[in-house]
Every structure is written in C-alpha cells, then in structure tokens.
Image (cartoon, rainbow, N blue to C red; front, side, top):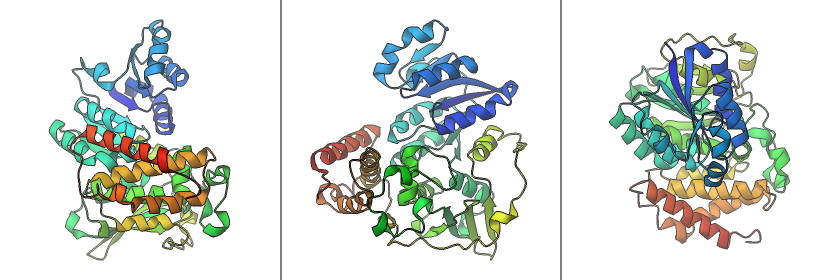
Length: 390
C-alpha cells in the first residue's frame, strides 16, 4: 500500500533530500502535494518527475505568472494550502515541512488537519508558534516528529522513557567554521568564510546561524517547547565531529547517546518508514573512529556572545518572535555585505534590551495574525533604525 506524502518546501534542502529518498522507492510512496515560495523552475521539474498533480506557489507574482505553464501539463496550481486541499478527504500518511523561516507557520497550521503525521524542520515556526501548532496537533490527532537531527535524536532516545527520570539533555554543536577563532580577529570576516561549515551542507541562512551559535540557541528553545521541559534541563556541548547529536542523562545513572552521519537523510528516511521501522541506510556501519578522543567542551561566551540569549525566558511571548525577526534581518544584511560579522552579535544583544522591544516580553500573541503584526513591527523598526555606525 502506497503512502501519500505532502512536501512543504520541496525546492529547499530538506525537500530535495526527501524526494531523493522517495525516488529510490517510488512504488511505496505517492507524492500528492509540493510547495515552493518562488522557485517555479525547480518545482515544475519535481512535479513532472514525481507525477504530482497539485502544487502551491506562495509568492503571489510567481503564482500568477506561471498558471499556464502548469496547465499544459494538467497540474493544478494554488496560492495557498487551504485552497489546494479544501476538497481533500483523505489524510496523508506524512507531511514533511522543510519551509525555512517564520513564513512556514501558516502553511503548517493549515496542513495539520490533512495529515496523520507531521515531520517538521521549520524551526522558526516552532519557536514562534508552537502553542498554536501543538493545539492543532492535539485537535486533529496528528502525530509529530521533530526533523532537525538534534531533536529527532532526543525524540528517539526518550520516547519510551518517563520524563521525570531525565536529569539533563545535551544538544551537541560543531562550533561551526570559527570554533577556534578569536571573535575579535574575525569581526570583519566575509560571508563566504562564514558559510564554510566544516561538516554539514546547509542553506546560507542556517550556515550563518551555525557560525554565530544562534542555530544552537534556536534548537534549545525548540527543545524546551517540543518536549515541554524547563530550560535547566538542556545544555550545549561542542562536538566538532558532529557525529553525536544528543546525549540524555538519566537520574538512575544511565546516559544514552545517539550518533549518526552528518546527513539529513537519516531522520527524514526514518520518518518516511515510520511504520515499518525497516529503513537501511547505505552507510549504516558504526564509525567508532569519530568517537575516539571526543574532547567535549562547553562553548565560551567570549567566542559566541549570543549564548547570553539563553538567560532570557521562553514562555511563548512576543520575545521569541522579536528574537527570530531581528536575527533574520541581521543575517540577511550580513549576507548582502551590508554589515560586518561582529555586528550580528553586538547589535542583537543591544536590540533585545531596548525598551521598544522589552515592553512586549510579558505579552503573548493570541493568534497567527498577532505574530505577523509583530514581525512587521520589528522589520519596520530595523529598516528605520539599523545603522552600522551605531
């Protein structure tokens, strides 16, 4: 029996990896829906190759300009998830969400009711809107699989454990390309060097987040929300080889570790074969050499100043939305060579303490509209006030 798959963000890194795996076992999967923001050329090829009859193009201009292109191939194009699936009566076996950024929140909420399981790698949506996602998951009785390698590893290690028995959970960080660099000496380093992650092949934005350690900060916030645990249950350990992804220390004296190669194929494939639990990875042998001389260390705040953000509270307030929005803008400007590298660190910490933003930290968004409004408030402030010479 074939499994119906919905794939959000099919033209991105997660989407490409998922389709690569599905291609190897086409008889077992039926891709029903693909989505992109504006990469029309790529999604067109994907739809033809996998015989997908429904696609969503979120960018309005790209959607309107390409209706005829898909019509010739009898592929239906929609501007939203709601319109694409409003007549759908059958739930998909699995929805994979590989959309990047907070823009993925609305499609996530819209597709849950059409999905038996949701595998999600869209960290910004989890950070800013988990309270709405988890409410919809419970309402629709939809299973949830965290797709980031660290969270998938934690999920795998603790799903049969009693939460009260967990003493500490460690998320590992590679340290990125600047682990052994003095921040003062790389304060003006060019984006091309920050993009050179030593172990992972990732998108441009997440590569910069890895260099600054913001990505790991986001992952701690995600873990707090996904696993419904307090901040003091989580910590970060630098593991330069990126082979170990999570460590769970239990009160009974046992410690579990989960290791796998640095590829997203493993969490994605194990989600695709969730029911059978019979996926065989091409390189499944244990690489013990990568565990020799582990040399775990705690990241130093002098090298990664953004770690100070972990002193804030993460209680589903506007703080998380403001944090994500500021970081998005700073990284975007850095990649465009408009601000120096050090500016990401210094300006982020400075902005988070400004009364203009702190007044919102005790308030909670009531719906997705509130989140969108706050993103706009942050963006407008930054457009007006973000100056390199500050």
